[in-house]
Each structure stands twice: as structure tokens, then as C-alpha cells.
Amino acid sequence: MMIKRLTTAVIGAVFLLGVGAGYASASPEDGARDAAATATTNGDLAGFFVRMDEHQGLRGQRAAAKAPQLVGDVQRIHTLNPEFVKGTAGAQPGVFSHLAVRADSASGQHASVWLAQAGDGWAIQNISNAIEDVTFTAQGAGAFNEPQIGAWYRLDGERIVALNDAARGAIGSEMTVGAYQERVHRLYGDKLPGSEYAKSGALGGYPGPAPAAVEQGKGDSTAALAIAMLLLGGGLAGYRLRHRLVR
Image 1 (cartoon, rainbow, N blue to C red):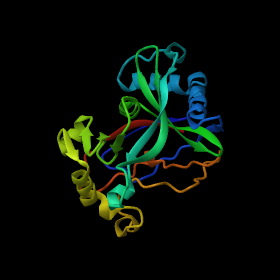
Image 2: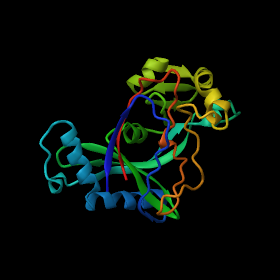
Image 3: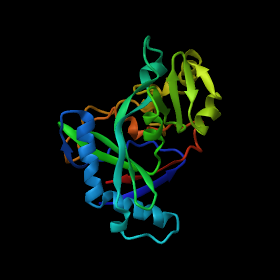
Image 4: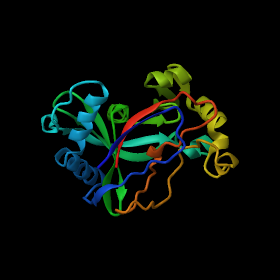
């Protein structure tokens, strides 16, 4: 198994990484948690945390000392909805992207384990050292991200409330839903899947739904996996995505 860290200004690729067999269960959340739990025992999370030490210039502890554990409930992560960007009547700002659960090491590190459907069950797709997704989602309903700029918001009635610095830099403390829709339509409306921009093969794109099935050698990967985050080109150079992908 290889762990890679990607640090880039603009990414125009889809990362759909199948890891292991899918775990089916009575509910998606239970199946996803069962899948995530394998990473606490097979060395994936321990190795991930050791590499975090190494990246920070610290002497890495032995993987066995990391004793990773899953923390809290599996969360349903939402991302900016292409239909909302398009202006479709009744479309919500956020749409389901993937499931995720937080993991902690014994030495105080944190990670978000991303899970996607694999056949009839769930499998790990990514391990990230950014935990805003599970943190903000666990704080209440309505959280979603604008992956092109790393912003997190919460839908609160007719308002979009900024949750992190990237969001506050984009809209201030809050904005009406209508004004936010105008903003994202202006920025991304001509870059949706099927647009001339997307067809041209220009660097970047919009995080629309992935194909219904992507061959990974171990079952299907679906995704409403906008976790792939097709980042936009023009105007967004400077957004830096830093996470480690497990393959």
C-alpha cells in the first residue's frame, strides 16, 4: 500500500481510489464504519500517522504506538450541488458526496477516513489529514463545502453561514441563499459537466457526479464522489489541497 501526499495549486484529476473489499451492513453508516475500522488494525492509519510525523520533521513513532481509533459517528458529507449552481428550481446548495469518519492516533493526530460504495458495501477511498469535513458536519445539519476554494458553509434557513476562513474570505460572515447562488453560478456556471469548458479539456472543471461505476479492480466506486474535487482552473490558482491519498 502506498501513501502519497499531494500539494498542488490546481488539480484537474479525479481521485477515486479503491481500497479493499466493500463492507455491507444494515445501514450505510454501519457498513462504512466497518470498512473504516479495518484501517485501524491493518496498519493503514498507523502508517499514515507515522508519515505525518515524518512530513513535519519529527521522529516518527513506531506504527504500533499510534494505536489509531475511530472517533464519533460516521458523517454524511455534502458538497456544492451542480444543480444549485445551474439554477435548477428547488435545488439545495449541498448534495451528498461521501461518508467519512474521524480517526485519532494515541499521539494526538487526527485524520478523516473517506468511504464510498464498493459493490453492495463500502470501502475506504481516501485518508485525509484535514478533518473539517467531519468536524463541521458533526456540529449540525446543513454543512457543505465549496471544494474549489476549500470553503465550508452551513445552510441556515435562507442564509448561507461561513464556517471557516476560506468561506469568510468568499462571502463574509453570511450571505442570502439567493446571493450565494448568483455567486457560484457566476463563478462555475460555465464549467459544469458537459459545458464547452469541460469538453475542451481545460485544466480543472467542476466537481459533478462521477460515473456510476469506475473500475478499480475491487468493485465499483460511485461517488457522488465529488470527493474527487475537480478543481477549477482560471481564478483559482493558489488553492492548495493538502491531503494524503491511500492506494
